[in-house]
Structure formats: C-alpha cells, structure tokens
Image (cartoon, rainbow, N blue to C red; front, side, top):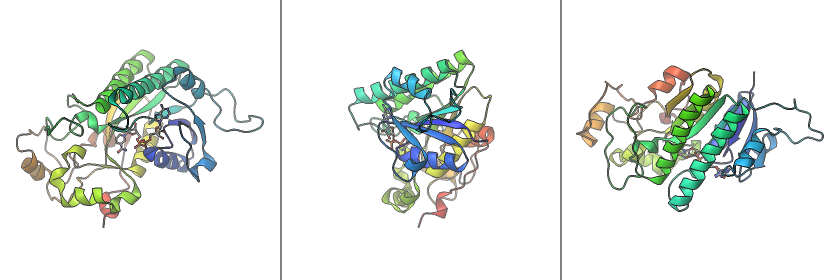
Length: 302
Ligand SMILES: NC(=O)c1ccc[n+]([C@@H]2O[C@H](COP(=O)([O-])OP(=O)(O)OC[C@H]3O[C@@H](n4cnc5c(N)ncnc54)[C@H](O)[C@@H]3O)[C@@H](O)[C@H]2O)c1
C-alpha cells in the first residue's frame, strides 16, 4: 500500500527523480522546498515553501495536509509515514562555509527533531560519500582502506562533509532516544540520465586516475529513487548508515583491485573485492535493504 511521504528539497536534482520513482510506486508525496517543483511533477505533488532552518516551519509543515483542496478532504489529522530529508547546500562554495554549516546542520537538526517529537517513525537522511574526506580535502588525501565501506572511521576536513557528519550524529542520538528508524544514505555522485553522455562521465571512463574524489563510483538518480523506496518500506533497523552507490567501478578496468593498487599503492585492503566492484562499496545496502541496481552505467554510456 502507498505511504504518505514528505520529501524535503524535492525540487532539486535528486529530489525530482526520487519523487518520480516514489509516485510510480503508488506513494503520496508532499514536497517541502524553497523553490517550486517543475512541471509535470508539480501537477501531482504539492510544494509547500518552507525554510527548514526555521524550526517552527519544519514542525508546522510536518503536520500539514498533502493536497490543497476546497474543503480539505484527505483523511485528516494523519502524520506522514516517513520523511526523506534531501534539502541542503549540496556542496561547498555555493555560499560561504559559515552559511553552508548553519543551513545544513540547522535544517538537519530541525527535521530530525520535529519528526521525532511528532512521532514519525521513519527518517531517511541524505548524507554524502564526501564524508570519507577525499572530495573536498585540502590537497591529495588517500582513502584509509579499500573497499570504502560504512565501517571506515570518517574524518573529513571540509565544511560540507563536516555538516553532513553532524547530521549523522544527530540521527544516531535521536534514533536511540525515540526508538525510531533513521537511515542515513551516504550518497555517491548522483548521475541523472542525460549525464551519461556528458563530459564528466566520459572522463570517468577515459581518465579514471583523476577520479579519486568520486571514488570511481556513482549512483544513478533513478536507482537512488529505488533506494529511498526500500528505505521507507523497511522497518526495524534503528539507526543505520548506508553507502548509496551503484555496483560497478566507473571505467573499463577488468580488476578493481589491480586498478586501486596502481593508483593508491599504499592503501590496504580489508577484504577481497569483486572483479569490477565499485570502490565505494554497496554490499550493506544490498544485503539489508535488498537494493538491486536497474541502471548500470554501461547501458547508457556511448
Ligand atoms: N548531487 C550529488 O551528486 C550529491 C551527492 C551526494 C549527496 N548529495 C546530497 O543529496 C541531497 C540532494 O542533492 P541535490 O543534488 O538534489 O541538491 P540540489 O541543490 O539540486 O537540491 C537541494 C534542494 O534543497 C532545497 N533547499 C536548500 N535549502 C533549503 C532550506 N533551508 N529549506 C528548504 N529547502 C531547501 C533547494 O531549494 C533545492 O531544491 C543533498 O542533501 C546533497 O547534499 C548530493
């Protein structure tokens, strides 16, 4: 049966694909964002303009109707089944670091607090693989070990990744306090369908040595939709952190292990890796949420 799901930041790049996927699964969605959803999604999903850095707005919006009708007729007084929190400054240098930190940490806190106190039992939180500390490091930094899984000690030095780490810590504490499910998604570089034909992906394939920052891994925006659906459907895992990435390395190397040994000769391996396994490992999300990718990059890259 379809669930009632609030998506924050749904008007953005990831949000539009996630909302489309969730609608296709029969869910009912309310989008909370500073800006509108483009058509045709806007015909099916109401966007409420909300600044999530304001706690009052987050509380009020979580108790909102999903559809604007006259009069309000949907089953009244219901809480959403889940909140998927995507709203964020999605990288460094969009605004000064102080504003990235203020906005990202405050909105993550407000969302987790409001949802928890209102009794919403499922929160899915968008974190980033940039917490592994390579993407926005000051200079070249090595991964501590391969594969890069959720067990690795994370210690990023940049403001965006640190703001995501703060959200992960709030999530962990609140899941414990409220006995709720809060699943953190460490999302890889999101690739939307048109991007397989663009310069970045071509460079992933043709100049792979230069792509440590993205961990030679990616997440297809539609597969990210599947992951959000699985995260909403699954219950009882408490606090969890998942790498949200596709299965395979983003180049034609025949052995991930040999490739990584060549580009990072000093980095140890903690287990044997599959022949073309993505260096940012998705083993956990496959095993616990049952993720099965539908959009391997080779299907679209020309
Ligand atoms: N794009 C990527 O490759 C990538 C990779 C890893 C993680 N992520 C994370 O995934 C999430 C979505 O990323 P995206 O690429 O879709 O970002 P995006 O910038 O395209 O969309 C973010 C949305 O959040 C909204 N927003 C920002 N601040 C807000 C606030 N205070 N209140 C309400 N809405 C607000 C924006 O208006 C925007 O529509 C983010 O949390 C980002 O950090 C993205």
